[in-house]
Length: 340
Image (cartoon, rainbow, N blue to C red):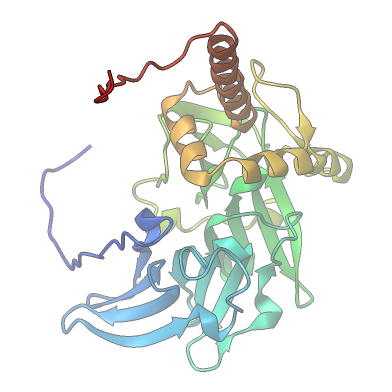
């Protein structure tokens, strides 16, 4: 649906530096509108979060990731150090930011910096979060403080509730098809809208964890329910709504956390550590490109099998050519000597 009417409020071209290993990440990844003139920006290019006054183009506040994180953490510095991929201004004025490469969601006081006691996740502790996207904050008025987040590399949607000064997992949902979730929004009716990027679909699940509808879409990245406000706001926390996700029961949650499920046509479920090792083996750009162009039932394991198959096939052909005596014939000139 489109009205074909666009009002440009603010724009800026972010340069791409050819010397970077992953040049396409040098950009602004997310923006949260504060008021008519001010925007909060998640800036992957410079590993920072800042607020800009669009009427004057003056940056009025800035938080640099290097103030809080060592350059030895996360991704390669300075190429893709934090990959800060989401920013949200909270009702109390704090700023919540998703620091993907450090597997953390941080809460930033604009005066004192990161409130470490509120940090959700821990670098390389993938049982909490692993390369997450799009955390959405649920305030106390709607049953929070809580955060629902697309736990991308864990192929799930998970929610955490603030309990006695700590984050406790309160809800999780995944199914056999889910691969690299990118967005999850709690809707006002208690349903959850999920963007399943490598599963090539957008779906909605109800309070009982059952699918209400699902629509196929090639490599979707984000979805919003129109009429529900910014980031599909207004939904209750899982604790208040007493949601029953696919892995709410402790025993089932333990099982789904220890397995990585594939579609019925895919390979058998393997331990999470195996999948992690596979993903670390394949360059991210190659993996995402392969999953983008391949059929929807393809996942990380199928990509690895394809790469190995192509490598073995090419090696076999070269070996056959060598042993059968095929040689590359280069033109050789003959120089006639004076004695000849």
